[in-house]
Length: 211
Image (cartoon, rainbow, N blue to C red; front, side):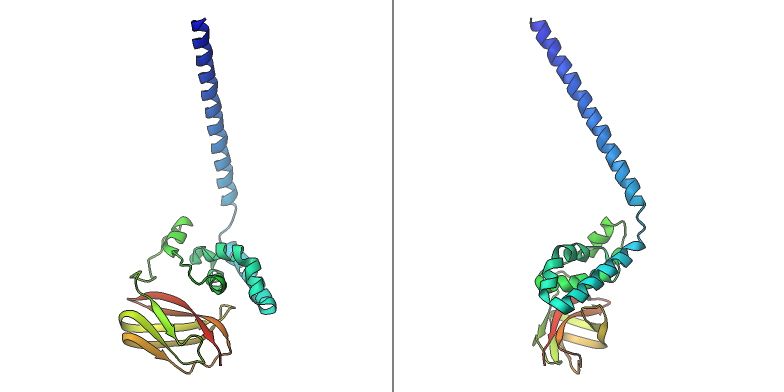
């Protein structure tokens, strides 16, 4: 009787091992099929698809305001987390729209691009503790940009609208922890302001013009 039980247990173990092996083979086959399918997607199509989507969002935003952004938010958040080198300018435009709902999100493009198989030299903020503050915000067109540390270099300042168009650009040298921007003659609205410095890196923030 004992020998029969032992034999039955061994048979069950063998059957279980066979099933595990079959499951592993099927899983690997699925992975292989997924790799083949992904290989058929040309990366050059991604920016075009993203651009079509973000243009649709922009049109709806102009008609419906924040309601449109709330409706598209999950897809916008996915797009905002793409590698900009793979997803194109639409990635930055998606980040602008996402910031209208949640301006606390930060994006790690080194990690995003690495996941897409793209290595990039880090040109973002060199120091994670380096931050900017815009006052006043909203502004009529003249405001100060304050840093939490000393800056000593030329900075390129760009203001971008919701369509991704640069509506203001200026290069200024700063030696200290604040700078004044004036004569920003653009229409009322919510914009993205970007500062780029060779040593400081890239800063992005939201700017509201209200005259």
